[in-house]
Image (cartoon, rainbow, N blue to C red; front, side, top):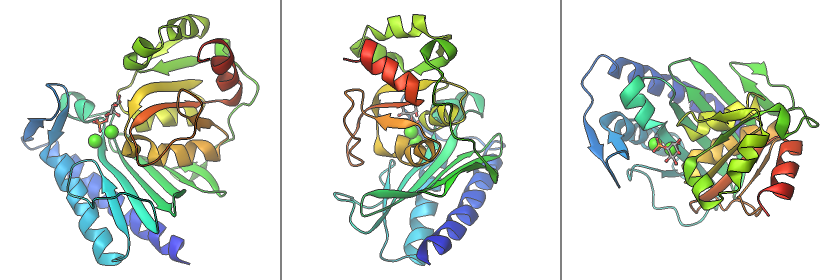
Length: 257
Ligand code: IPD
Ligand code: CA
Ligand code: CA
């Protein structure tokens, strides 16, 4: 079965990429800015993406790769198998702290998320989800999320750009146990998938920020949508909410209408 081979290869490549990123801690990074002074890209972002593009194309010539750093294919549709890759999610954390960043890799087949991997390199934690087969961290199965606890029982993660567009979210934050922000969307998705936070809201994520996180989070029963409650189009940038079911209900009813 092709997915089994893809899974085996993806894990192999993730470990090689993570090892290279760890080795780069001892070297001088070359850092460039993109859209602004805090939108950074390093040689390791580019090298890691280039590595995945090369090994994927070599092993699976019919697969396409959709990635952040411009070394991947020009993907305009999700027909066939498309890998959606963020070589380093949380580059600002990578550059300033050498922690709190992840490699995010997702495999979509005809637009449906099949395999998702989020590798927290510094913690050596690999989150994995497979459609209808559950989610795992380092091989340990993740429990389904609590379906009944609500906003008052949980921390909220909210990107400030989301709260600028939806000022009422400050009221939601007050109604929660408090606000947290980690600076890597994929790991923020995993904070919700593991029940460490009730929801993560962001006004502007790219497909590679959330492609793997969506697969893993949905496997444990989280709701994943745009902030206007529509489905996410995996080819477009836009808002995102990942939430425990009851927290989602409360946020929609009281704050996101
Ligand atoms: C960013 C991080 C950040 C999120 C931004 C993303 P990058 O990804 O996930 O937490 O708020 O929207 O662009 O640039 O570090 O891969
Ligand atoms: Ca990212
Ligand atoms: Ca990135």
